[in-house]
Amino acid sequence: MSISPDVFRTGKKYRMVNHGDTFEFVIEKFEGSNDYLLKDLHTLETYYFQDLVRYGKGIDYLLEELEENQDQ
Image 1 (cartoon, rainbow, N blue to C red):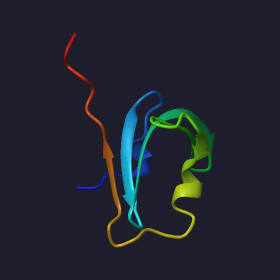
Image 2 (spheres, rainbow, N blue to C red):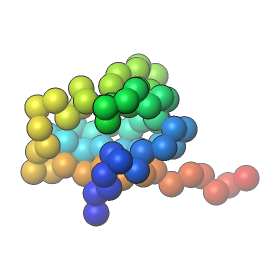
Image 3 (cartoon, rainbow, N blue to C red):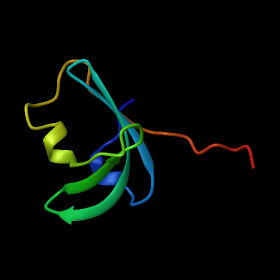
C-alpha cells in the first residue's frame, strides 16, 4: 500500500515507483508547499519531489518507506 508524501520525515529513506521508473531517496529538507529536497541513494543527485510527480501518477505509482537495516 502506498503512503502519502504528507508523512515524509527528514532523514528517512523512501522508494517511489512511477511510470516504470524506480527512485530510492532520502529526504534532505522540507521546502514548503508540499515540496521536499531529495537525495538519490544511488547517484547522490539532489532533486525535488515535485519533479518526480510533475507528469502525474501512473498506474504503477507506489510510494513506501524503506526499512532501516537492523544489523548493528
